[in-house]
Length: 576
Image 1 (tube, rainbow, N blue to C red):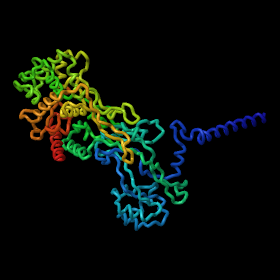
Image 2: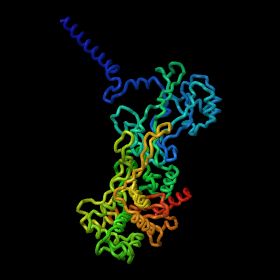
Image 3: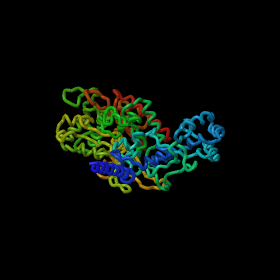
Image 4: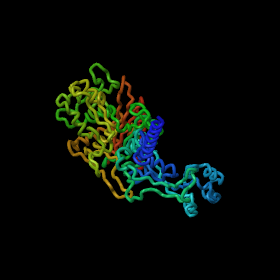
């Protein structure tokens, strides 16, 4: 009996020791890089416990504007202080005098810091070149002058450029804390921008936090002549800054602005409001009212009377439509329903300038009776069909899309709507189911300004290696098929000019600025007009810029008109 108990205890001990050995083997050999349900890398955690480190550069690529001005990263001189200085007789007075701070302040931070720190974070001021050079010459262990690469959220063009956040925010099950782009170009160009290795300073410590292996601080990182890359955007940062200032000055809290170079279709400025909630960018994501991460310049909305430009283009080229007759603008778009404004008998040009709904409803219904696809045809001719952002093969990527979040143009809700006079009437004035992005409308204006030449819109022109050499190019993409004739484009330019320069035009506030354009007001619900647009190009004789301004949350067009006017005046001063 006693022998049986001894054998039983021995077996239990053997099983217990076997389980312990298996657990140790699992921890140290089998699962050291993905331990447990959270797949923790024990090797990395072990190194973290034995080292103190400070990041100098996360190794991620960055963005520059069209003139190579840095947009997302800034190299700054800084001084790193390591906490082991507290146990050394270091030249406190000399260092504090060099930095221009009281020696007791510096001594306090060193004695109470458990981790290395940047002096600029303490001073809240930039380190000057004189400070940097003096401490570099001092060459004292634990005090390291460095060139620090700051990777912060963009101050300007934030919706265009996007944000970078820890991967675990995007995917809570991810086992790495590396950062990825979650919106804008940071997300679009992630394959190019992904980090090639972080640069950092580190030193080893024992269990009490004391330095091991002497006082040597090591540099860890990948020295690469090619990476990280930089994305050369088409943005002009000076224009972008002014656009944001003007938009905020006029208190547009939902909407924005797009400015294009007419010739190249480069985006020179893109502003979206509301501002991104940097602390919690995912808050209210997908909520059409409160989503701050969404770029409203890529969101399709009711364009209102701007869509009359499409109807006008079709009428100009239509063989059966007499655009030289007079139109009764005292009538509404439906029989028996009076218009908001009685404008009397107007010509085609006057109707466009004063935005007479009746004229363009009549014309649209006449054309659609002959050809139910005529509106679609001219939507394509004016460069509004589908999406307008740059798409194509680049480097190793097929069908690369610079604006994958851009919404497509919608004209008809259902196929049978194109045979219904009431639906045609609402469609002709940019209501019903018509939805177009501000980016597409700006592109339409650029198409008209360039004699009908259609092109895709670019937000980036090149990917550059670290050395500045070109890695990949986004060539201009002209679209030669189904173009508007040069004559028709000229006639549209004349119509758009009357809007902004005739005494009765809806854009008369722009008189004297050599602008051609079209206003738009969209009723969203119950006759309320919260959408106000103005889109156009300038200077009229030699168009250089195409621009759209949209306010999606006002009861009048004052803010929209004010922003457009101020931007034109600024660009005229900048150009001339």
